[in-house]
Image (cartoon, rainbow, N blue to C red; front, side):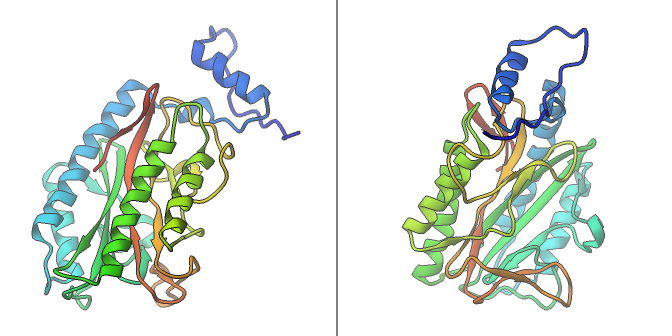
Length: 284
């Protein structure tokens, strides 16, 4: 029997809602359920949605401007200026010492690449640009892959399958399903296409803070992990590798995550809110 962790607590004197009853039932069965505090109010969801509009606008601008010969520092400048011009703040700037306004991860860099003047995009590169926006205290987080000019069929397939993994993970996430349902669906699709799923990094709750519960792993078993309850806001952001799923962190900067075999990696990310009918995308 699974140990029953009591996360969902209803304050004394407060009348039980239908949602309370449903979650308490799952909790009584031994399911891992969220705390009530992870369920966002309509006002909070609206705030995250507004932040998401700016976050999407940032990535639209990058998509419009990105080209061979551009440095990742130039991308960072675009992100910083657009975000500030729209009354928001880039969440990564200064976060635990991270020095830039976005992450730029080229080819074998999985994530957390630091923009700089020396990384200049070349024909055939694939790059992930990851932006998190804070507007009025609300966080929205998304990333996209960009192919610079023409690349190899293998890299094109990697980028496409990584996006499909995000979409399949989104479809697998259903109200009163489980986080493990997402990971199971993502891993199955990646493996079917001959790729692997990074295990050392994952999606996460977001909205009021940069990183909240639950961890959203992109591998796993159906019916495991935290219960997905309407009102939860989280990212799905599968990192799909051409070779091994193993990665290492660059010792020089303490941030950049690279594939162990130095083969390419691709990632797409959206922020979602769980509704009674499935996921709604808050960032594109």
